[in-house]
Image (cartoon, rainbow, N blue to C red; front, side, top):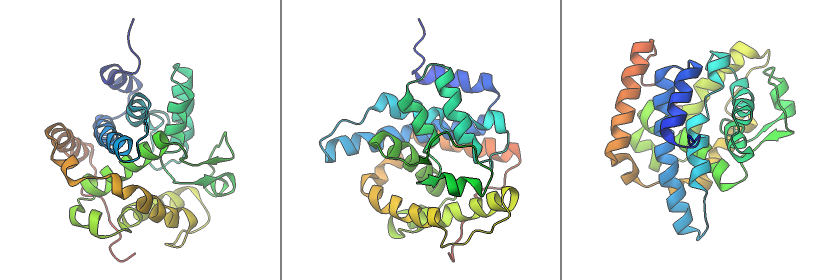
Amino acid sequence: MEDIYSREYIVNFLRETGLHEYKILHSVGVAILAIKISEKISKDENCLVNKKIVEAGSLLHDIGISKTIDDLSPNHTTIGGEIARSHNYREEVARCIEDHEYCVWTKEEGKMVGMIMNRESFRPETWEEKVVSYADHVLFVYSECNKIKDFWEDPTCIQKAAFPYWVDVFKKFSLDNIDAKHPFIVRQYWHQMEMKKYIDPNFFEDTEYIDITEKMRQAQVKYGLKVPFPYADNL
């Protein structure tokens, strides 16, 4: 019987859905970081972070893009959670997927961009949910925006990396505008402040991580993306 939680199984599953290869490589990179963050939290906080849930949530966090196609669509989180449930993944995995993008996303805020929400809010609350969300943001800053120095010296680095993305989201899906004072841009600061102590520079020297991120960037260029991604230095 196949183990639906194994990395090999999930990567094959992602390919079967038609998710683009650069997103699959991105997801593997997130999983590698998330496992390392989980181990540090377990040691520092003397608690058990479920690495099985963390790895599956990390690998599957962007699976909803296989249906939305558009990476900008906020609904990829809701759709991704439902895909996980329909394929017999545990509820904890589905919630990691739903909670990975926003730090906190309320139904009222979701209405602004036409988002489908099956819960009152998408808020990372468990360690597993926080780790998946944070690892995704860390990879984005460190390996896709290439802001290596800023990551440890600038507590606003996640906001600066995320802001150009959210400008595009709001431009496409909302009649409202977004600025740097928007609640979930501010929340990303507090997310970084809470979680940054669980990141070690040595995490990024792992040869498996380096190999995956190099392949990811090559796939992004092949797909036609301009890399590194925009970064709001003056936010």
